[in-house]
Length: 308
Image (cartoon, rainbow, N blue to C red; front, side, top):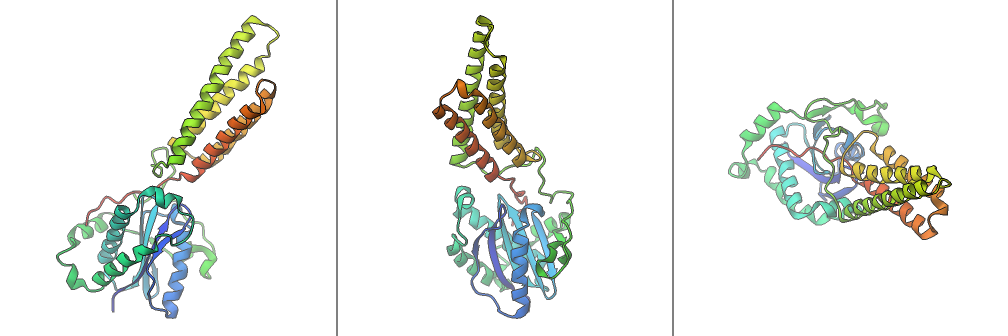
C-alpha cells in the first residue's frame, strides 16, 4: 500500500530538528530510513533544494527553502508528485506560522513540536488521495518536476553512517545547487545582526576619525609615528570588511571574518598607548560579536518557484 509514513522539519544550517511526526511504523525498514533522515540532515547545506533518496522499499524526499528543510518518508510506490505537493504544503504552513527569526534562533530540538498536529492532518489527507482532488493542482507540480526533477541521492553519497564507505559529495550544477557565489542570498537578518552591523560601522568611523587626527599630528609634529596612522586605517578597513561579509555571501566567508577579527585585535594592541583599556575592550568585543553574527548568518536554500 502506498502511503506517507513520517515527516520532519529541520534547520538547514546545522540539522537541528524543529518538528516531526510522532507516529510511524516501527518495522526494521522504517527504523533504518530514520537513520538516513539524520545523516541527510547533517548535509542539507551541501545538497540541492529538492532531492530524493531511494532506500529499498522506501523513499526519502525533501525540499529546502529559507534555511529550513521539509523531509518525508514514504513507500517506494507513493507518487512523487504527491510527495512533493505534501512537502510544499508543509512548507507554506510553517512559513506562515513561524517567522524566520524564531527558526534561526532556536536552540533546542523539536521546539516547534506543536506543528506535528498540522503534519498529522496533512498526512492523513495525502494518504487518502480521494480527498485531494479539489485541493491541489497536480498538473502544476507534474510540470515542475518534469522541468526540474529532484536530485537523486545515492546511498554511497551518505558516507559511512549507514555502513557504506564515505564518498565526498559532488559539486552540483544547475538550478538545484546551493552555492556560495556572491549572488547567493543569505538568511534573513536578525536583530542581533543589525546591532552588530551598526556597531561595526561605528568602530570603523571612530578609527577613521582618529586616523585623520593622527595625520594632522604627523604634519604638525615630525616625531609622530606614521605607523599609528596605518594602524587606524587598517582598523577602519577591517571593520568595514566585516560589514561587507555580513551583508554579502563570498567564498571562504567565515575564514575571512576571523582574519578581519585578528587584524582588528592586532591594530588595537599596537594602539595601546593611544587608547585606554575600555576603548580597546569595546573595539575587540564589537569585532568578536560581528564575527559571530557572520558565522550564524548562513546562505539560505533556494526558495521553490512552483505553486500547488
